[in-house]
Image (cartoon, rainbow, N blue to C red; front, side, top):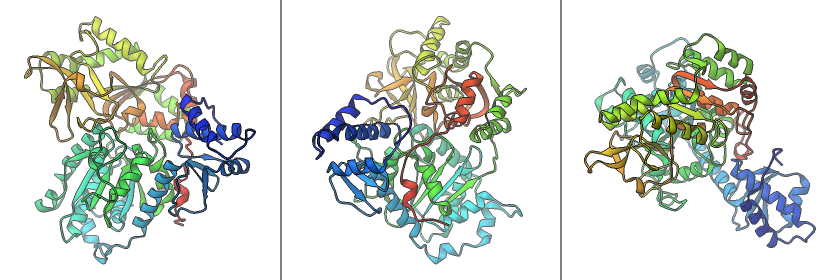
Length: 552
């Protein structure tokens, strides 16, 4: 079992009672059974894909008649709601996702590539990566990606993951008899925009022909758009029976991809297709179940390469991120208190500081500047909170910032919607092509009688606008949670921690927040909360890493 405080929801309790009533257990056994099922339901909602059982718990679950015990990772044909594998208890659906993903990846890693790709010349690698006497991690990643159908390229910010993958795409196009069909994707619209910008700028510098460059796409989509999300449904248009047409799929920010979505992505790949995952394994895991990227880097070392040299990340921010990642709490706190202009504790009033950061984009709205300029200016700065409710939370600070901006006549509050309101979509709507994580700004539309519209910039640079009434569930984002910031990057980040310890505070959360910043970090925190945050590490229970043979 997982040793942490559990507050079961009504759904957890109703689900456990529903199964208990259909079990073969007598009345004396049912309370213990229900407790195990409630724990499983609760922990799955906390991001775990399974829970551990002791021998007594395993025997009780099997005696219920509602569980199947599996001894390997082969296909299982059962409608029973519970699965036991070794000492792990799963809800059937999540065992299926985990098992199916492992099956697909084992097939990909066992696939033998053609001789042409195995005889890649050093000359071709020299062309793209140059000649160096020291270890070139980017070149090593390219060799791995060329010779395998599945690979993971991981590394912190600024280590050149996108630069490397663009060169890999050019190499693969040069090695292929026919131009490869390539799809580029990311979990959120913001992450897709970042990848698209990076692909475009890096492609221009490639030492190859125009023909090869033109075969490398610049358009990046979200994973939900790529797979063909169906409105009001967990299913996608593409699946094992209707696979994607692409020869190669590249997914950026893979740490954000949960178990279910990664499993469904693998199902959509046609036989022989390649998959490259890019991401930072040290960032927060997905909001939903699993720690897929971290599990796979552990289970598949021969398919994983970590880029270790930072090329553009600010040196002070890098030192802080490294100290936090290594759980060096005292060293990290000392860095924040040292005489650095770009990493420091915030010494001015919190609300006044955030308010001042909003003036530039709000003034552009007053001047009727182009939306692209307004959007770019807004995204220069972002305040990030660890929690949604309570003191120093998103809710608390958002209300205070709106009040401050209104008092300064920078916005005019006349209801939920007002000119200048920045929002983030929190609910997918495939019909409108708006997805969780997409950021828009409410403005008056000069082309539509000055009516309020919500403007969104797409990954290809185009602008879409919607009536506020059509917008799916969303939140005002003068402040956002650190979880919601994944896949984003800002010149300056303000990180706000609660005043007291909170179970959500972990070193992965703080590391993720810090690595959103390119130039400057300000932090609001007291020493005790900071120390406890850095000392705590995320530990999710999953079985994915155990489903692969040893790579030793």
